[in-house]
Image (cartoon, rainbow over the protein chains, first blue to last red):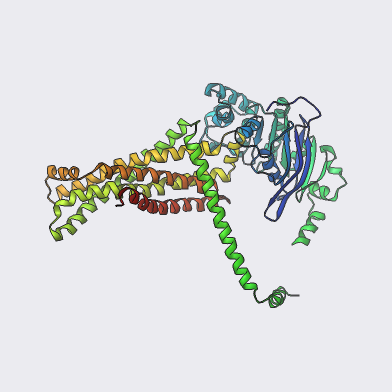
Length: 264
Length: 277
């Protein structure tokens, strides 16, 4: 995939993306544009469809209907080398970091370069060390295995792996889940710094509002499979939408709870 | 209205054929689930074999799996076949003595071990050791999103995880069985010469005299088939495991049980193919 420079074409464009599991409609016609270099955060409660949305974009799940285009190229239904070609321009930080247990830290970071791009191991190691330095990890960490690292360090390694291949688009799945507030803020800062450094487009999903407002230029709220609000990150606390207000302020009372009770 | 009364009222209003319809619906669901499983397994097998024979290959990963399956399984396979050879010599001697055919002990031991006991015992032992480990490792990778991470890093999980294990299983099981055969025959020899009073030279002569190439080859073919089945079951159940630690545990159990059953079934099938008159 050759990234286009045409500013009229969004980096990421979703139209009518729908995903069902049996009778359960998880995504119900999602329309979304993310401009090149923009950082968009999708917020929403547990079970609102955030992870499914991300997996559909990454090609891990196939939507039942709709279109997902990256740099104007349709990606739904791509398999094999065509999908690998698209993925070569994508970085992903998983919720639990998803580091490979059997590999050393530097091999994890350089994995996409060695396996995906057939880079030589010495060159890949040099790039891995550079990325580890970028996320604030000491070089001696490179030869450890993931089991020897704390949760925060694993997230940093995951971030280093996500940026190692210098992707155009980086996805973050709940980047601060399971971290203490200080480490969460460190990770947020690293996400902002690394994506800005790469000039990459970022799409994150989270329910951590501190993280959302820090790393996002725009925020979209997903509720019951639909995007009910999209706007600037600064405006999210004054959206005027009852659902968004309740969620971002973490109130127990409000339309979300009432509807959930009514359904029960 | 109390919940119990509500349910009771609803049940009273149900038409007479409702239970029969429910039963048919359950049967239908079970049948559809079965067909879905068979289809999923067939697709998994097809994709696995495709990646097993098509480059690129991962020599480092294949070598690691070969060491895991071949080298680390050697003690358990060796011990199993050694004691089985000893028992076989003892039992054959006792049984054959009833019609004065003790002289056939060496021949019976070698043929039994090369054709049946070697491959089947090695297969079952490796299924317990390696099949379980594969299902647990791949299952853990599945539930911790490591398999998704592979895909996003432009690496096909079938090529990276499944194919090296299948190649190692198919190639290393015959090697293990060959070594197991030798150890098993040696176990029989040891009992034959030290306990049953056979002359060592005559025992060896009887061992070799009636042994045919087909006896050994059929055992090695069985071993290759069992190696494929063990790796396939381990990878399949691990790949589709769901639901955290419990799911990985279930995948491990299913991998060992299904591989063991398939080994016994395929043992008959291969025997029929080789020796049916």
